[in-house]
Length: 261
Image (tube, rainbow, N blue to C red; front, side, top):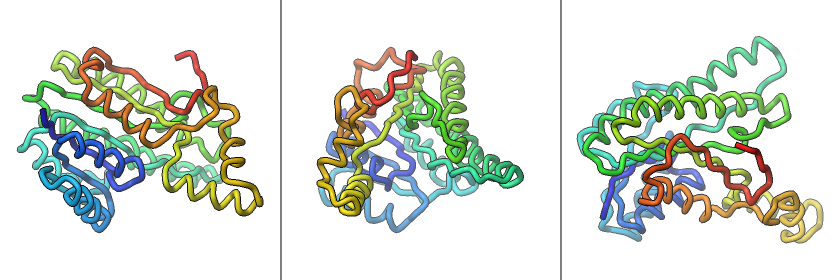
């Protein structure tokens, strides 16, 4: 059965792979991102491989509700079955207190309150669906704080989302809507692979050696693959096996961190 999913920040490494996976499974897509040219290229790529898939693209800034108007109206007109919400990456925190104030205010707007607004406005579009699934893509700091002052915004934004989705699970659960979080650790995305390759050349080491060092603390002795992350997202988004799972936060990192919750 074909569903229609809305995916934000669709042109990133994980977003692109996820969209291709959803299209491969026969699902229609509404895609959004800041860069309209990248959206057009992604649409061409998907249609080139899966011409039967219906795809609509909208350029939007999740920190600015006015840019989301057309996308929200279209999604609610067509009807959607699920949402994959990938908020923007929080910024690094400066040292100056006044600069921190502005940085954190902007981070909360762009990475939390703006995307939260979008999510609320899209919920009516799922009213007639028999799926009604929302997946938030977060990260390690939603499970375990990053012990570095520059990364403070990551800790605060992502833990705020944990609380938000638990509240939404209570508020919209009676309507059958599920809210779950998938939190990847370090993932072997194309961007990260290039970074490790560059690092190995700088250190005059083999790529495999550097990668082994980076995954040494993981229980499985390997980092998360992009395919593994995408398949986990798809399970919680679509599988009947996840029909009774909500308000959960699933961490994917090969066992690098092992919190008790």
